[in-house]
Image (tube, rainbow, N blue to C red; front, side, top):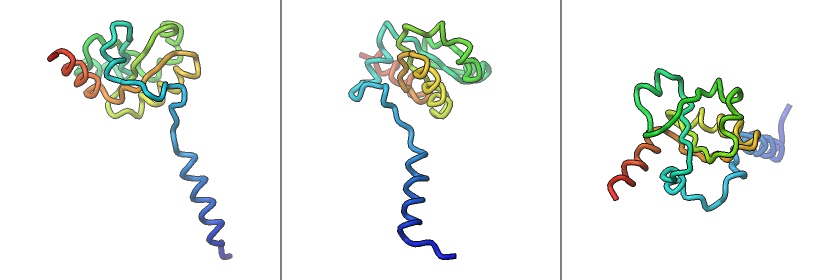
Length: 123
């Protein structure tokens, strides 16, 4: 059976658009550097404890992704910057946090957050 060009295009578009992640709850012009260096922010490393202990951002707390849902109440009412190794777990954690009313921001990786902190310390 032959598929039409339109059909292939439509299926491709739908498949690709379903993979997009949106951060609509985040303010469009948020400066992550300002959020990370704010005294009112909670830095949240969602990696496993062994990875957290091997290195993380200054003043970061560790709640592994698998335990986020059980710790929602401790994070409500706080500004939270979420990060991990590469951002994949952080994205998943942010989705859970935002669905539960937590103000969450994407710090992507612990090295990114630490780099922002180191840059701010030089000033």
